[in-house]
Length: 82
Image (cartoon, rainbow, N blue to C red; front, side):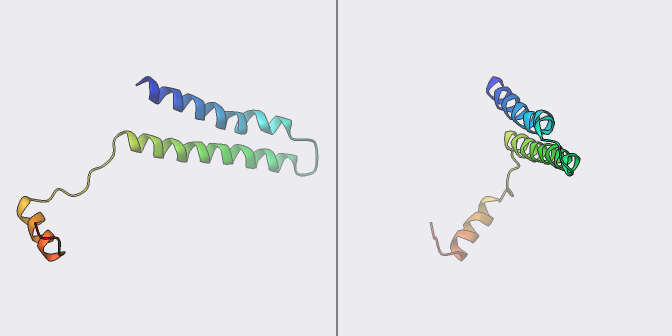
């Protein structure tokens, strides 16, 4: 479980820096607030997407379960006879 925690912490810190720290470094200008909001939303969406994909890979869904007879028939029909 430790190896999973390390990657979650690293990516959370990475996107946290982009979404929380980087907006304060933006120089003053007419579009400063817009750029800050864009950085925060981008970081939040990218982190959430990464997190969902990462968590999904920890417990993957399995494909359809075929009966032995069905698998044999498909092998014959698809040309890879056993």
